[in-house]
Length: 192
Image (cartoon, rainbow, N blue to C red; front, side, top):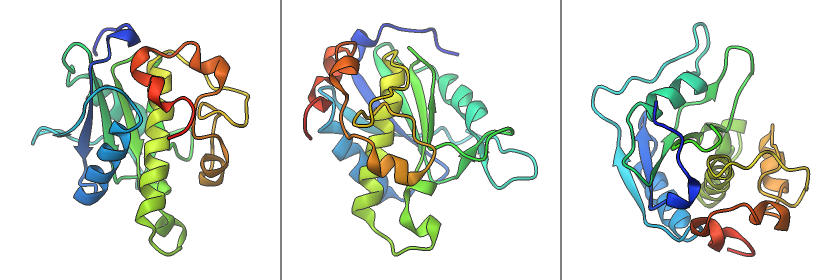
């Protein structure tokens, strides 16, 4: 697992394609994310031998073991790896996660599965899926910067256990959380 790093060292965000998310989704998410942070964002394919760990008896990837596998890819100094997968992710104890990251880590995992309206039997909406996915990535990157969940309903760091909660929480960092963000995160404060 990669050593903890200082969030001020952030130089690049790499969106790691895992388990075949649609390429147009990955491209749209990466482009939108690049407008939310002040460092370059690029797409990186997972190694050919990269295996997604699954939860026995469930059709879900194990979020924590997947996060560890992504961390083991050992991103270069100053790079953050954001694993974007189309697979639903969960934990043996919890039903699902939208994303996972460790405080001051160098990697995050985000699943687009439950962020897509199709998951709930609704009409496909690529724009909404991209927006939700980017918001969840920014939330997880907040954890990488050391932020905890926030009690402010208008803050992107508010905990969300449902897609409705993601839609209803803020899209930016509240003033209190923004104080602790590294410079690379500055553009996501305010409106974007």
